[in-house]
Structure formats: C-alpha cells, structure tokens
Length: 227
Ligand code: SF4
Image (tube, rainbow, N blue to C red; front, side, top):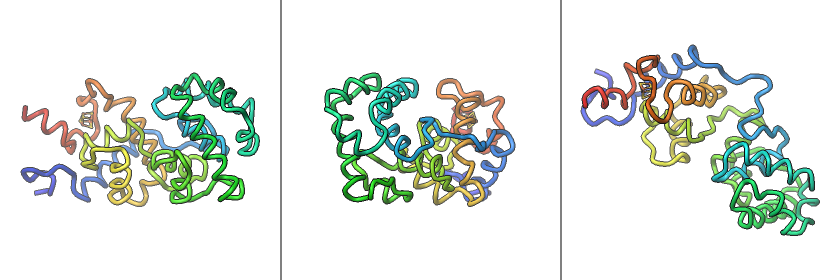
C-alpha cells in the first residue's frame, strides 16, 4: 500500500509525486522560449521592482503601475532621485502606494550601496533586498535568470496542497516542500505545468475533477469522495 493511502497521510509519497509530475508534464504546456513571467518583465531591475509592486495587486494593475513608474525612471539611481509624491502617483493603480514607495526607495538604495547596481542572481541575494520575499525571489530566479525553480503563486499553492504534493499552510512553505519533493527533471517546467493545471482544471471553485489526470492520486478528491 502506498504511504499516502494509509490512514492520516496528508502528503503523497515520493513515487506518487513523480507520477503526478509526469502526468502533468504530458497534459499541460511547459515553459516557452518567450516566457516572461507573470509580471511580464524580463529585465532584472524591472522584474524585481514589478514583483515588489505586485503585492496584493492584480497583474493588470501591477502592469499599469510598473509602466508608469518606468516611464519616469529606469535605473536604481534615477528612481531614488524621484520625489516620493511622483512615485506614489505613478504606482497608485497597484494600491498600498505609500508603503510601496518607501520600499522601492529602500530597494534602490540597497542595490546601489550593496550590490553595485546589479540585481543579485541568487535566491539569498534577492531575499536580502528590502521588500523581496521568497515568492518574488523565485519568480525573478525562474523567469529572469532561467533557474530551475518552481515559483509558487496562489494557483501553484492551491494545486500542490490539494493534490498532496505538499502539506503547507503558506506559499513559502509550499515552495520549500516542492523544492525538496519534486523530481529534479520537473523543476525547470514545474511552475508552468502547475499554474496551467490550476487555471484550466484544478480551478479555485468547483475544480473539474472528472477531467483531471491525477484524480486517482489526489488527496483532496479522495476526501471529497469519502464525504
Ligand atoms: Fe484538483 Fe480535483 Fe484534480 Fe484533485 S482531482 S487535483 S481537486 S481537479
């Protein structure tokens, strides 16, 4: 009997995790050569700034704010030289604009003072920047630097924990568990398979379990079937 079929198991075992990724890789599109990430910002500075702006904001509003901000300043020095009011007005569409203005200035100052005006290409370096957490760091690592990293957004978090790939309460914990549990071959494209699966099949409300290629393994589905 597989580990996850024993009473009380809340995660799939290693072999089942591999099967899930294999099936998702066959059913869902992976990374494309032109993938720019959810913030659509391939340049490292633009990418990290856009991630900071994206907190509690829809992608369309983040993009509006980022476009307005980059029209004013394209480098850490130029952004740091802007008046706070000018930044706040530009980024208003993404909300929390006063807090984000302060964070942006700290981010630019840190890049200038500690990183020679270059966005670090490691998770640790990125997470050392003011306002940049694991999710942002992993998005920049994956999309801007092409690293084999499964960045975890709301879709990936939901899907991973429903299936039982992870048993995490937070997106950061899901990211840590996926890094430990996903097979190495799945790290490059895993984000793309999971996010597309979350948008097409395992949607937030009323997941399409009847059309799901991993329903026989999914812990959420087994629980629902028992109920
Ligand atoms: Fe999502 Fe349903 Fe598939 Fe489970 S069986 S992964 S809940 S769509």
